[in-house]
Picture (tube, one colour):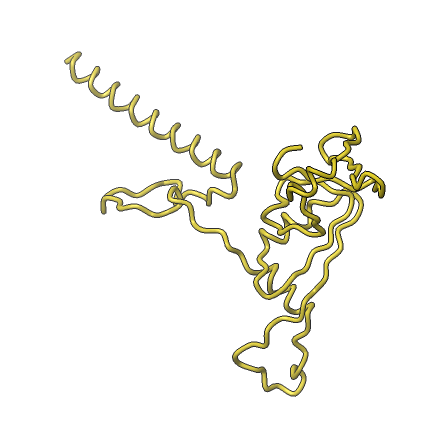
Length: 182
């Protein structure tokens, strides 16, 4: 077994005080002897954080969503289970400012918190998306680039920009050739 391996206990031998486990990464059963267990090489676990389970695929996942959840984390957590992904909505923390409309009082339940979580993003703007200094006389005919999160639009924008730059370079080269031919 390697550090961080996940396994399911498939048998317990009371006489030898050993465990038989089936690793998630290998279907072959393994017997863990008493000395291995006594040296604390094995921990019992029943849950992982969403960050720890990135890249893990399980049959079922059970996800607790609270006020700190954002859309990116919810997507990662909800894409782990092959057969089932179950959400448990924790009651969100009360807002600092309570709504005083009679129709809205006490209507902030767990589903409202989950909806707010899916509308919240933790992504940061990439350096490539930051507007840099541009000369005052330079006007980009294509406008600002699309965000890097829209890969197809970003590539199309870059290709169009390069075509314009090549066309301008060719015009300048032709202008030099014409001037030299005089």
